Length: 240
Image 1 (tube, one colour):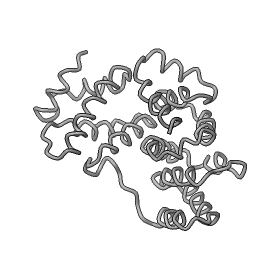
Image 2: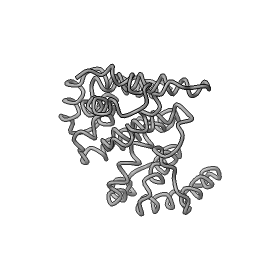
Image 3: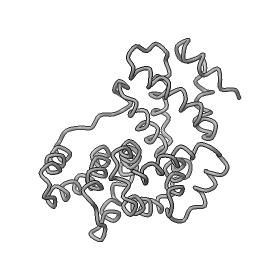
């Protein structure tokens, strides 16, 4: 749990200083610390350094970060987008020399399933054929079927975890359609506890991240006056 706790704490720290964190990312030549990983997973979209991806994967494996399911909400959606754009590199990144635990296979198989690439599907089949774990066999069988993954941009945000998944999808791509979905969650008309948690977290995350991510700030400015009165009032807090 300690390793996971440090990982999540560093993940939050990536929003503290734009100059320091983005400069740190741009200067990286390998992923050697938790701080490196979080800079990589927060600013990758600003300057995609594909050459760092194998190092990031190896760090996750070495530090056993996939053992804590709380990290799933960050790692799965981020790498799903990476694998979607670089399906051809999966056989290299996950070659025979890479040792994967059951937790690693579980996490990366879900990312590959979401990416829907051919090499990702082949890798999941390889996990299915190699595991002796009956529970994992059932998981990999489902993931290697013809079923289609959900698109987070097209489903109701019923759980707070979806916010993390959307943000990490954005950090991997810079695709503002993920921000469009997140912005809808800032509407105040909420009833259930989960809805209130989602609303509060969505507003907090936009304010925090926009301070240190220029693209997010510009998105908020650009969308002023284009939504409901409630959302427009929230966006009015972002000043040029």
